[in-house]
Image (tube, rainbow, N blue to C red; front, side, top):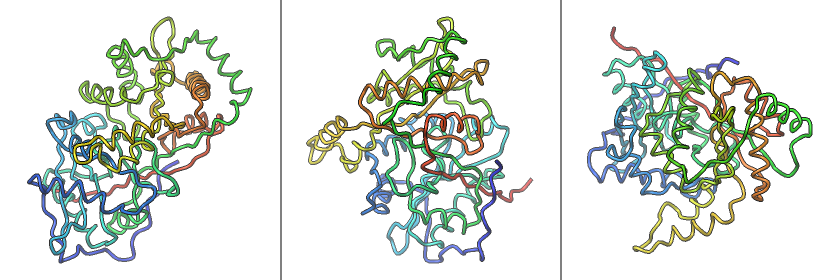
Length: 395
């Protein structure tokens, strides 16, 4: 399935003349950049307010290992002194080197429902990228496919799962009005665990396990660093040239490993091994968004860990999760190993008393993976969209 371009807007919008867009330079600017997101979603029942300290860490070049190779500049749009939008211009040389492209990104987009403001923000990013001789802009990406990326396009009736984006519907309209077209859709799948997987699925998975001589085991938390290295080796080889994929650096992976360890359920972090060597893995995390939401962006209030306590109490009630990654070494692909890991994940989740969760994300045109997920009774529940447009640059 090839992505279809969005319909062209009836008229090219003009950036609002009363809006100024300036780069984030001061700590006050950065605070305003972060706080604007909470303003946009005020009253939205499905929005999960990110923890403020996490947002500051993410935007800190000294703490986010992505900044060791990537460049991002943050911008604020103001009207009469009031913030009405924000955006980041992003350049990831590792992505371009890996795919042989000349692409820049926009990210961290938040905006009032005003096409003139959106146009001013997008034009600022495009100018920034063209000054660096970049030929195409895509997004949103914060700051790559290894983080939150794409706009939610379908499925606005429920909160986002852990590490998945959420946005108002009108963002798609603003983006298309500013000349951007669809590049690729990503899908999320809803999986209920009320019944056992179909008997045929279990029987086929067992045959695959025997044929390949597979052993499936949970992660060993006591050997955490080595387990993370095993995942890293499979992960960076498993996706190769998949659309949008970019390998993580060791430091990026280590930082992600530390985050995941905080809420990891070992029974749902699985390795498939052949002859004692890991050939595939799957990671399913509790949907911490349900706990993060009750903190309302703050772990502490007046120095007291009120938000943290609320989160810890809420975590005890979480009975759903998200399968966030499943990777298989190239030489072991197309052998059905993904079905073995899916089956063991479903069984483990049921033993833990979970009722279901989300499998996300998959590429819309990855037919083999999407069919495998459907076999387990999952239904497509959300669509996320990456946009793009070409830029006119000097040769």
